[in-house]
Image 1: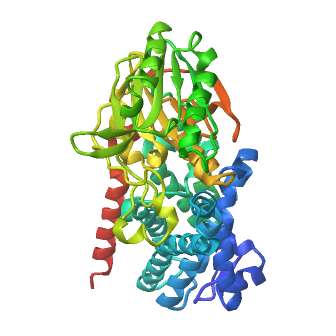
Image 2: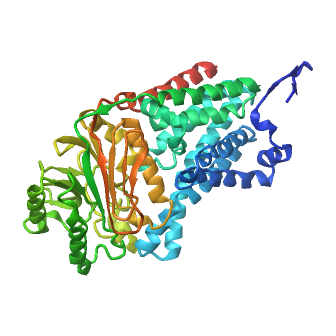
Image 3: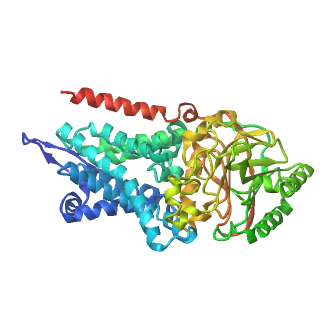
Length: 525
Protein backbone atom coordinates (compact mmCIF):
# COMPACT_ATOMS: atom_id res chain seq x y z
CA UNK A 1 0.00 0.00 0.00
CA UNK A 2 1.42 3.40 -1.00
CA UNK A 3 0.98 6.41 1.28
CA UNK A 4 1.58 10.04 0.36
CA UNK A 5 3.48 12.21 2.83
CA UNK A 6 3.25 15.99 3.32
CA UNK A 7 5.76 16.63 0.53
CA UNK A 8 3.78 14.64 -1.99
CA UNK A 9 6.32 11.81 -2.00
CA UNK A 10 4.96 8.28 -1.99
CA UNK A 11 6.27 5.70 0.46
CA UNK A 12 5.75 1.95 0.60
CA UNK A 13 5.44 2.07 4.39
CA UNK A 14 2.17 0.73 5.75
CA UNK A 15 0.84 -1.16 8.71
CA UNK A 16 -0.24 -4.68 7.90
CA UNK A 17 -3.60 -4.05 9.54
CA UNK A 18 -4.32 -1.44 6.85
CA UNK A 19 -4.72 -4.24 4.35
CA UNK A 20 -7.98 -5.13 6.07
CA UNK A 21 -11.19 -3.76 4.48
CA UNK A 22 -11.43 0.01 4.98
CA UNK A 23 -15.03 -0.14 6.22
CA UNK A 24 -13.98 -2.58 8.98
CA UNK A 25 -11.22 -0.23 10.12
CA UNK A 26 -13.68 2.66 10.01
CA UNK A 27 -16.10 0.79 12.28
CA UNK A 28 -13.26 0.09 14.73
CA UNK A 29 -11.99 3.67 14.69
CA UNK A 30 -15.07 5.80 15.25
CA UNK A 31 -18.78 5.97 15.85
CA UNK A 32 -21.07 3.83 17.97
CA UNK A 33 -19.72 0.68 16.30
CA UNK A 34 -16.26 1.33 17.75
CA UNK A 35 -17.63 0.90 21.28
CA UNK A 36 -19.17 -2.42 20.33
CA UNK A 37 -15.90 -3.52 18.72
CA UNK A 38 -13.99 -2.74 21.92
CA UNK A 39 -16.14 -5.26 23.78
CA UNK A 40 -16.18 -7.75 20.89
CA UNK A 41 -12.39 -7.74 20.47
CA UNK A 42 -11.94 -8.47 24.17
CA UNK A 43 -14.49 -11.28 24.02
CA UNK A 44 -12.49 -12.96 21.23
CA UNK A 45 -9.33 -13.24 23.37
CA UNK A 46 -10.35 -16.32 25.46
CA UNK A 47 -10.85 -18.33 22.26
CA UNK A 48 -7.06 -18.50 22.00
CA UNK A 49 -6.68 -20.15 25.40
CA UNK A 50 -7.48 -23.68 26.56
CA UNK A 51 -9.63 -25.57 25.88
CA UNK A 52 -9.87 -24.13 22.36
CA UNK A 53 -6.18 -24.25 21.48
CA UNK A 54 -6.14 -27.91 22.54
CA UNK A 55 -7.92 -28.66 19.28
CA UNK A 56 -5.47 -26.73 17.10
CA UNK A 57 -2.63 -24.26 17.61
CA UNK A 58 -4.40 -22.06 15.06
CA UNK A 59 -6.59 -20.90 17.94
CA UNK A 60 -3.43 -19.68 19.71
CA UNK A 61 -2.54 -17.44 16.78
CA UNK A 62 -6.07 -16.05 16.69
CA UNK A 63 -5.11 -13.78 19.60
CA UNK A 64 -3.08 -11.55 17.29
CA UNK A 65 -6.24 -10.35 15.53
CA UNK A 66 -8.14 -8.87 18.51
CA UNK A 67 -5.01 -7.58 20.23
CA UNK A 68 -3.62 -5.84 17.15
CA UNK A 69 -7.03 -4.32 16.30
CA UNK A 70 -7.44 -3.16 19.90
CA UNK A 71 -3.98 -1.55 19.80
CA UNK A 72 -4.92 0.06 16.47
CA UNK A 73 -8.14 1.35 18.01
CA UNK A 74 -6.29 2.64 21.07
CA UNK A 75 -4.21 4.87 18.82
CA UNK A 76 -7.33 6.41 17.23
CA UNK A 77 -9.06 7.66 20.38
CA UNK A 78 -9.91 11.36 20.55
CA UNK A 79 -9.75 11.88 24.31
CA UNK A 80 -8.35 10.27 27.42
CA UNK A 81 -11.88 9.58 28.65
CA UNK A 82 -12.83 7.79 25.44
CA UNK A 83 -9.60 5.79 25.61
CA UNK A 84 -10.23 4.66 29.19
CA UNK A 85 -13.81 3.55 28.63
CA UNK A 86 -13.04 1.70 25.40
CA UNK A 87 -10.17 -0.08 27.14
CA UNK A 88 -12.49 -0.89 30.02
CA UNK A 89 -15.05 -2.34 27.58
CA UNK A 90 -12.30 -4.43 26.01
CA UNK A 91 -11.43 -5.85 29.43
CA UNK A 92 -15.09 -6.49 30.24
CA UNK A 93 -15.45 -8.51 27.04
CA UNK A 94 -12.27 -10.46 27.80
CA UNK A 95 -13.19 -11.38 31.38
CA UNK A 96 -16.94 -11.79 30.84
CA UNK A 97 -16.10 -14.70 28.53
CA UNK A 98 -12.79 -15.84 30.00
CA UNK A 99 -13.68 -16.04 33.70
CA UNK A 100 -17.41 -16.68 33.46
CA UNK A 101 -16.70 -19.71 35.65
CA UNK A 102 -16.65 -17.44 38.73
CA UNK A 103 -20.45 -17.46 38.51
CA UNK A 104 -20.43 -21.28 38.70
CA UNK A 105 -18.44 -21.24 41.94
CA UNK A 106 -20.66 -18.65 43.59
CA UNK A 107 -24.05 -19.90 42.40
CA UNK A 108 -23.78 -23.65 41.76
CA UNK A 109 -21.55 -24.54 44.70
CA UNK A 110 -21.69 -21.45 46.89
CA UNK A 111 -25.50 -21.63 47.13
CA UNK A 112 -25.89 -17.92 46.38
CA UNK A 113 -29.01 -16.68 44.60
CA UNK A 114 -28.45 -16.21 40.88
CA UNK A 115 -28.88 -12.45 41.21
CA UNK A 116 -26.15 -12.21 43.85
CA UNK A 117 -23.92 -14.53 41.83
CA UNK A 118 -24.31 -12.29 38.79
CA UNK A 119 -23.68 -9.21 40.92
CA UNK A 120 -20.43 -10.47 42.48
CA UNK A 121 -19.18 -11.97 39.22
CA UNK A 122 -19.91 -8.72 37.40
CA UNK A 123 -18.24 -6.67 40.11
CA UNK A 124 -15.12 -8.83 39.87
CA UNK A 125 -15.07 -8.47 36.08
CA UNK A 126 -15.54 -4.69 36.25
CA UNK A 127 -12.64 -4.32 38.68
CA UNK A 128 -10.27 -6.51 36.67
CA UNK A 129 -11.18 -4.68 33.45
CA UNK A 130 -9.95 -1.38 34.87
CA UNK A 131 -6.38 -2.46 34.09
CA UNK A 132 -7.16 -2.41 30.36
CA UNK A 133 -8.89 0.93 30.78
CA UNK A 134 -5.74 2.41 32.24
CA UNK A 135 -3.64 0.76 29.51
CA UNK A 136 -5.72 2.41 26.78
CA UNK A 137 -5.61 5.71 28.67
CA UNK A 138 -1.81 5.49 28.89
CA UNK A 139 -1.58 4.75 25.15
CA UNK A 140 -3.60 7.90 24.42
CA UNK A 141 -1.33 10.00 26.61
CA UNK A 142 1.71 8.47 24.94
CA UNK A 143 0.38 9.17 21.46
CA UNK A 144 -0.27 12.80 22.37
CA UNK A 145 3.31 13.14 23.62
CA UNK A 146 4.75 11.49 20.52
CA UNK A 147 2.61 13.78 18.34
CA UNK A 148 2.25 11.04 15.75
CA UNK A 149 0.46 7.75 15.36
CA UNK A 150 3.24 6.18 13.33
CA UNK A 151 6.27 6.66 15.56
CA UNK A 152 8.54 3.65 15.79
CA UNK A 153 8.77 4.40 19.52
CA UNK A 154 5.38 2.69 19.75
CA UNK A 155 7.18 -0.56 18.95
CA UNK A 156 8.94 -0.14 22.28
CA UNK A 157 6.29 1.48 24.46
CA UNK A 158 3.15 -0.50 23.59
CA UNK A 159 4.48 -3.95 24.59
CA UNK A 160 6.06 -2.52 27.75
CA UNK A 161 2.84 -0.78 28.77
CA UNK A 162 0.72 -3.87 28.14
CA UNK A 163 2.95 -6.16 30.18
CA UNK A 164 3.27 -3.53 32.91
CA UNK A 165 -0.49 -3.71 33.49
CA UNK A 166 -0.48 -7.52 33.29
CA UNK A 167 2.26 -7.51 35.92
CA UNK A 168 0.31 -5.07 38.11
CA UNK A 169 -2.69 -7.37 37.88
CA UNK A 170 -0.54 -10.21 39.24
CA UNK A 171 -0.13 -8.63 42.67
CA UNK A 172 -2.58 -5.74 43.24
CA UNK A 173 -5.24 -6.85 45.76
CA UNK A 174 -3.38 -10.19 46.20
CA UNK A 175 -3.22 -10.64 42.40
CA UNK A 176 -5.12 -12.42 39.66
CA UNK A 177 -2.72 -13.17 36.77
CA UNK A 178 -5.29 -15.10 34.73
CA UNK A 179 -5.47 -14.96 30.89
CA UNK A 180 -2.03 -13.42 30.41
CA UNK A 181 -1.46 -13.03 26.69
CA UNK A 182 1.56 -15.37 26.54
CA UNK A 183 -0.24 -18.50 27.75
CA UNK A 184 -1.86 -19.57 24.45
CA UNK A 185 1.60 -20.11 22.92
CA UNK A 186 2.58 -23.10 25.08
CA UNK A 187 2.40 -25.34 21.96
CA UNK A 188 4.06 -22.95 19.49
CA UNK A 189 7.65 -21.98 18.61
CA UNK A 190 7.30 -18.95 20.92
CA UNK A 191 7.23 -21.35 23.88
CA UNK A 192 11.01 -21.61 23.53
CA UNK A 193 11.34 -18.19 25.16
CA UNK A 194 9.50 -19.19 28.35
CA UNK A 195 12.51 -20.82 30.11
CA UNK A 196 14.49 -17.64 29.45
CA UNK A 197 12.08 -14.75 30.05
CA UNK A 198 9.03 -16.39 31.63
CA UNK A 199 5.36 -15.73 31.02
CA UNK A 200 5.63 -11.93 31.19
CA UNK A 201 8.49 -11.95 28.69
CA UNK A 202 6.41 -14.18 26.45
CA UNK A 203 3.50 -11.74 26.74
CA UNK A 204 5.90 -8.94 25.78
CA UNK A 205 6.80 -10.77 22.56
CA UNK A 206 3.13 -11.40 21.74
CA UNK A 207 2.36 -7.68 22.04
CA UNK A 208 5.54 -6.82 20.12
CA UNK A 209 4.35 -9.01 17.25
CA UNK A 210 0.88 -7.46 17.47
CA UNK A 211 2.43 -3.99 17.36
CA UNK A 212 4.37 -4.92 14.22
CA UNK A 213 0.98 -5.46 12.59
CA UNK A 214 -0.22 -1.91 13.26
CA UNK A 215 2.75 0.44 12.99
CA UNK A 216 3.83 1.76 9.63
CA UNK A 217 6.97 0.04 8.41
CA UNK A 218 8.00 -1.44 5.13
CA UNK A 219 5.97 -4.61 4.87
CA UNK A 220 9.10 -6.69 4.42
CA UNK A 221 10.58 -5.22 7.60
CA UNK A 222 7.49 -6.19 9.59
CA UNK A 223 7.47 -9.71 8.20
CA UNK A 224 11.21 -10.06 8.78
CA UNK A 225 10.87 -8.92 12.39
CA UNK A 226 8.10 -11.43 13.05
CA UNK A 227 10.08 -14.22 11.39
CA UNK A 228 13.13 -13.50 13.55
CA UNK A 229 11.04 -13.73 16.74
CA UNK A 230 9.54 -17.09 15.73
CA UNK A 231 12.85 -18.54 14.53
CA UNK A 232 14.53 -17.44 17.79
CA UNK A 233 11.84 -19.22 19.80
CA UNK A 234 12.19 -22.39 17.74
CA UNK A 235 15.97 -22.42 18.28
CA UNK A 236 15.67 -21.80 22.02
CA UNK A 237 13.14 -24.62 22.17
CA UNK A 238 15.86 -27.07 21.19
CA UNK A 239 17.88 -26.37 24.35
CA UNK A 240 17.59 -28.85 27.22
CA UNK A 241 17.88 -26.70 30.32
CA UNK A 242 17.97 -29.60 32.79
CA UNK A 243 19.03 -33.23 32.87
CA UNK A 244 17.63 -36.41 34.42
CA UNK A 245 18.56 -37.20 38.01
CA UNK A 246 18.11 -40.79 39.14
CA UNK A 247 15.47 -43.20 37.96
CA UNK A 248 11.91 -42.20 37.03
CA UNK A 249 9.25 -42.53 39.71
CA UNK A 250 6.07 -44.47 39.03
CA UNK A 251 3.10 -42.38 40.13
CA UNK A 252 -0.61 -43.00 40.67
CA UNK A 253 -2.91 -39.96 40.79
CA UNK A 254 -6.11 -40.73 42.69
CA UNK A 255 -9.10 -38.69 41.55
CA UNK A 256 -12.12 -39.22 43.81
CA UNK A 257 -14.53 -36.89 41.99
CA UNK A 258 -16.61 -36.31 45.11
CA UNK A 259 -19.28 -33.79 44.20
CA UNK A 260 -18.45 -30.37 45.61
CA UNK A 261 -22.02 -29.89 46.83
CA UNK A 262 -21.74 -32.81 49.30
CA UNK A 263 -17.99 -33.02 49.88
CA UNK A 264 -18.11 -31.19 53.21
CA UNK A 265 -21.22 -32.94 54.59
CA UNK A 266 -20.57 -35.12 57.66
CA UNK A 267 -22.51 -38.07 56.29
CA UNK A 268 -20.25 -38.07 53.22
CA UNK A 269 -16.99 -38.36 55.18
CA UNK A 270 -16.94 -42.17 55.63
CA UNK A 271 -17.91 -42.65 51.97
CA UNK A 272 -15.07 -40.37 50.89
CA UNK A 273 -12.54 -42.19 53.06
CA UNK A 274 -13.58 -45.58 51.69
CA UNK A 275 -13.59 -44.22 48.15
CA UNK A 276 -9.95 -43.08 48.28
CA UNK A 277 -8.88 -46.28 50.01
CA UNK A 278 -10.65 -48.33 47.34
CA UNK A 279 -9.17 -46.36 44.42
CA UNK A 280 -5.69 -46.70 45.97
CA UNK A 281 -5.96 -50.38 46.86
CA UNK A 282 -4.40 -51.74 43.67
CA UNK A 283 -1.76 -49.00 43.46
CA UNK A 284 0.40 -49.72 46.51
CA UNK A 285 2.51 -52.55 45.10
CA UNK A 286 3.36 -51.09 41.70
CA UNK A 287 4.06 -47.41 42.41
CA UNK A 288 6.69 -45.34 44.15
CA UNK A 289 4.19 -42.59 44.87
CA UNK A 290 0.42 -42.27 45.32
CA UNK A 291 -1.00 -38.76 45.20
CA UNK A 292 -4.36 -37.63 46.53
CA UNK A 293 -5.65 -34.14 45.68
CA UNK A 294 -6.15 -30.97 47.71
CA UNK A 295 -8.28 -31.57 50.84
CA UNK A 296 -9.05 -35.11 49.67
CA UNK A 297 -10.38 -35.95 53.16
CA UNK A 298 -12.02 -32.70 54.32
CA UNK A 299 -11.47 -32.94 58.08
CA UNK A 300 -8.60 -31.78 60.23
CA UNK A 301 -5.53 -34.01 60.24
CA UNK A 302 -5.40 -34.37 64.01
CA UNK A 303 -8.90 -35.90 64.17
CA UNK A 304 -7.76 -38.87 62.04
CA UNK A 305 -4.02 -38.86 62.75
CA UNK A 306 -3.96 -41.91 65.03
CA UNK A 307 -6.51 -43.94 63.09
CA UNK A 308 -7.08 -43.34 59.40
CA UNK A 309 -3.77 -41.65 58.56
CA UNK A 310 -1.77 -43.96 60.84
CA UNK A 311 -3.09 -47.00 58.94
CA UNK A 312 -2.25 -45.36 55.62
CA UNK A 313 1.29 -44.68 56.82
CA UNK A 314 1.72 -48.31 57.87
CA UNK A 315 0.50 -49.43 54.46
CA UNK A 316 2.87 -47.04 52.73
CA UNK A 317 5.90 -48.26 54.69
CA UNK A 318 4.93 -51.89 54.19
CA UNK A 319 4.90 -51.48 50.39
CA UNK A 320 7.78 -48.97 50.23
CA UNK A 321 5.39 -46.46 48.71
CA UNK A 322 4.81 -42.86 49.74
CA UNK A 323 1.43 -41.19 49.88
CA UNK A 324 1.15 -37.44 49.33
CA UNK A 325 -2.19 -35.86 50.16
CA UNK A 326 -3.76 -32.47 50.66
CA UNK A 327 -5.53 -31.93 53.98
CA UNK A 328 -6.48 -29.19 56.45
CA UNK A 329 -4.21 -28.98 59.50
CA UNK A 330 -5.04 -27.29 62.80
CA UNK A 331 -2.16 -25.84 64.79
CA UNK A 332 -2.80 -26.13 68.54
CA UNK A 333 -0.16 -23.54 69.39
CA UNK A 334 -1.47 -20.75 67.21
CA UNK A 335 -5.10 -21.96 67.10
CA UNK A 336 -5.05 -21.39 63.35
CA UNK A 337 -5.67 -23.83 60.54
CA UNK A 338 -3.96 -24.23 57.20
CA UNK A 339 -4.56 -25.66 53.76
CA UNK A 340 -1.70 -28.14 53.72
CA UNK A 341 0.10 -31.01 52.05
CA UNK A 342 1.78 -33.90 53.84
CA UNK A 343 3.78 -37.00 52.94
CA UNK A 344 2.94 -40.32 54.60
CA UNK A 345 5.35 -43.24 54.48
CA UNK A 346 8.49 -41.24 53.83
CA UNK A 347 10.20 -38.40 55.63
CA UNK A 348 7.04 -36.69 56.77
CA UNK A 349 6.80 -32.96 56.36
CA UNK A 350 4.05 -30.42 55.96
CA UNK A 351 3.65 -27.64 53.44
CA UNK A 352 1.23 -24.82 54.36
CA UNK A 353 -0.35 -22.90 51.50
CA UNK A 354 0.88 -19.29 51.56
CA UNK A 355 -1.06 -17.60 48.73
CA UNK A 356 -4.70 -17.96 49.75
CA UNK A 357 -7.77 -17.36 47.57
CA UNK A 358 -9.66 -14.26 48.76
CA UNK A 359 -13.32 -14.98 49.58
CA UNK A 360 -12.62 -18.69 49.11
CA UNK A 361 -9.99 -19.62 51.70
CA UNK A 362 -10.22 -16.44 53.72
CA UNK A 363 -12.75 -13.63 53.75
CA UNK A 364 -11.57 -10.00 53.98
CA UNK A 365 -13.78 -8.01 56.37
CA UNK A 366 -15.27 -11.34 57.39
CA UNK A 367 -17.35 -9.95 60.25
CA UNK A 368 -19.33 -7.84 57.77
CA UNK A 369 -19.42 -9.96 54.65
CA UNK A 370 -20.21 -13.39 56.13
CA UNK A 371 -23.57 -12.13 57.32
CA UNK A 372 -24.55 -10.83 53.89
CA UNK A 373 -24.10 -13.79 51.55
CA UNK A 374 -24.28 -17.51 52.30
CA UNK A 375 -21.45 -18.16 49.83
CA UNK A 376 -18.97 -16.55 52.21
CA UNK A 377 -19.93 -19.01 54.95
CA UNK A 378 -18.37 -21.90 53.03
CA UNK A 379 -16.61 -24.62 55.08
CA UNK A 380 -12.89 -24.05 55.58
CA UNK A 381 -13.00 -20.41 54.44
CA UNK A 382 -10.92 -19.06 57.32
CA UNK A 383 -7.49 -20.52 56.53
CA UNK A 384 -4.30 -18.80 57.64
CA UNK A 385 -1.40 -18.32 55.26
CA UNK A 386 1.81 -20.30 55.67
CA UNK A 387 5.27 -18.77 55.40
CA UNK A 388 6.37 -17.77 51.90
CA UNK A 389 9.82 -19.28 52.40
CA UNK A 390 9.14 -22.97 53.10
CA UNK A 391 11.60 -25.74 52.26
CA UNK A 392 10.75 -28.31 49.57
CA UNK A 393 9.03 -31.54 50.62
CA UNK A 394 11.11 -34.74 50.39
CA UNK A 395 9.49 -37.41 48.17
CA UNK A 396 11.30 -40.74 47.61
CA UNK A 397 14.59 -39.03 48.36
CA UNK A 398 13.95 -36.17 45.89
CA UNK A 399 13.02 -32.62 46.82
CA UNK A 400 9.72 -31.38 45.40
CA UNK A 401 8.62 -27.78 44.93
CA UNK A 402 5.03 -27.70 46.21
CA UNK A 403 2.02 -25.57 45.29
CA UNK A 404 -1.62 -25.90 46.32
CA UNK A 405 -4.47 -24.90 44.05
CA UNK A 406 -3.93 -21.63 42.21
CA UNK A 407 -0.55 -20.91 43.81
CA UNK A 408 0.96 -22.26 40.60
CA UNK A 409 -0.31 -19.26 38.61
CA UNK A 410 2.18 -17.07 40.50
CA UNK A 411 5.61 -18.09 39.15
CA UNK A 412 7.46 -15.60 41.35
CA UNK A 413 6.10 -17.34 44.46
CA UNK A 414 7.40 -20.81 43.62
CA UNK A 415 10.59 -20.40 41.61
CA UNK A 416 12.71 -19.89 44.73
CA UNK A 417 12.17 -23.61 45.51
CA UNK A 418 13.22 -24.82 42.05
CA UNK A 419 17.07 -24.74 42.21
CA UNK A 420 17.06 -27.12 45.19
CA UNK A 421 14.20 -29.29 43.87
CA UNK A 422 14.12 -32.12 41.34
CA UNK A 423 10.39 -32.14 40.58
CA UNK A 424 7.17 -30.18 41.18
CA UNK A 425 3.85 -31.19 42.65
CA UNK A 426 0.53 -29.35 42.64
CA UNK A 427 -2.68 -30.43 44.37
CA UNK A 428 -5.85 -28.67 43.27
CA UNK A 429 -9.60 -28.64 43.65
CA UNK A 430 -11.15 -27.43 40.39
CA UNK A 431 -14.47 -28.97 41.36
CA UNK A 432 -15.70 -25.49 42.37
CA UNK A 433 -15.90 -24.47 38.71
CA UNK A 434 -17.81 -27.39 37.20
CA UNK A 435 -17.66 -28.01 33.47
CA UNK A 436 -16.27 -24.58 32.61
CA UNK A 437 -13.12 -23.09 31.09
CA UNK A 438 -11.38 -22.89 34.49
CA UNK A 439 -9.86 -26.42 34.75
CA UNK A 440 -8.50 -26.19 31.19
CA UNK A 441 -7.07 -22.72 31.71
CA UNK A 442 -5.52 -23.79 35.01
CA UNK A 443 -3.85 -26.80 33.40
CA UNK A 444 -2.41 -24.54 30.70
CA UNK A 445 -0.84 -22.30 33.35
CA UNK A 446 0.54 -25.31 35.23
CA UNK A 447 2.19 -26.49 32.01
CA UNK A 448 3.84 -23.08 31.65
CA UNK A 449 5.38 -23.43 35.13
CA UNK A 450 6.91 -26.78 34.12
CA UNK A 451 8.32 -25.19 30.96
CA UNK A 452 9.67 -22.10 32.74
CA UNK A 453 11.48 -24.21 35.36
CA UNK A 454 12.40 -27.27 33.24
CA UNK A 455 10.90 -29.52 35.91
CA UNK A 456 8.39 -32.32 35.53
CA UNK A 457 5.11 -31.73 37.32
CA UNK A 458 2.70 -33.98 39.18
CA UNK A 459 -0.79 -32.45 39.16
CA UNK A 460 -3.52 -34.17 41.19
CA UNK A 461 -7.04 -32.74 41.27
CA UNK A 462 -10.34 -33.71 42.86
CA UNK A 463 -12.36 -33.95 39.64
CA UNK A 464 -9.90 -33.18 36.83
CA UNK A 465 -7.83 -32.30 35.05
CA UNK A 466 -5.18 -34.51 36.72
CA UNK A 467 -1.99 -34.89 34.70
CA UNK A 468 1.72 -35.63 34.58
CA UNK A 469 3.61 -32.93 32.68
CA UNK A 470 7.16 -33.13 31.34
CA UNK A 471 9.88 -30.49 31.60
CA UNK A 472 8.89 -29.02 28.22
CA UNK A 473 5.34 -28.38 29.36
CA UNK A 474 3.94 -31.33 27.41
CA UNK A 475 1.17 -33.44 28.96
CA UNK A 476 2.46 -37.02 29.24
CA UNK A 477 -0.58 -38.53 30.97
CA UNK A 478 -3.97 -36.88 31.39
CA UNK A 479 -6.93 -38.15 33.37
CA UNK A 480 -10.64 -37.77 32.61
CA UNK A 481 -12.85 -35.06 34.02
CA UNK A 482 -15.71 -35.77 36.41
CA UNK A 483 -14.86 -39.45 36.79
CA UNK A 484 -13.36 -41.50 39.59
CA UNK A 485 -9.98 -42.64 38.34
CA UNK A 486 -6.48 -43.81 39.14
CA UNK A 487 -4.13 -42.24 36.59
CA UNK A 488 -0.76 -43.95 36.20
CA UNK A 489 2.50 -42.77 34.71
CA UNK A 490 6.13 -41.95 35.42
CA UNK A 491 7.84 -38.74 36.43
CA UNK A 492 11.54 -38.03 35.92
CA UNK A 493 13.36 -35.98 38.61
CA UNK A 494 15.75 -33.46 37.06
CA UNK A 495 18.64 -31.19 38.02
CA UNK A 496 19.91 -28.00 36.42
CA UNK A 497 17.56 -25.16 35.69
CA UNK A 498 16.64 -22.29 33.42
CA UNK A 499 17.71 -18.65 33.18
CA UNK A 500 14.21 -17.58 34.21
CA UNK A 501 14.51 -19.40 37.55
CA UNK A 502 17.60 -17.32 38.35
CA UNK A 503 16.48 -13.87 37.27
CA UNK A 504 12.68 -14.30 37.56
CA UNK A 505 10.77 -11.16 36.51
CA UNK A 506 13.57 -8.73 37.32
CA UNK A 507 14.57 -8.14 33.67
CA UNK A 508 10.96 -7.25 32.87
CA UNK A 509 10.79 -4.92 35.88
CA UNK A 510 14.09 -3.37 34.78
CA UNK A 511 12.53 -2.81 31.36
CA UNK A 512 9.68 -0.92 33.04
CA UNK A 513 12.24 1.30 34.78
CA UNK A 514 14.17 1.88 31.54
CA UNK A 515 10.94 2.80 29.71
CA UNK A 516 10.03 5.26 32.48
CA UNK A 517 13.50 6.86 32.35
CA UNK A 518 13.44 7.16 28.55
CA UNK A 519 9.95 8.65 28.68
CA UNK A 520 10.97 11.16 31.34
CA UNK A 521 14.11 12.22 29.52
CA UNK A 522 12.33 12.44 26.17
CA UNK A 523 9.42 14.53 27.40
CA UNK A 524 10.69 16.31 30.52
CA UNK A 525 10.49 19.63 28.70
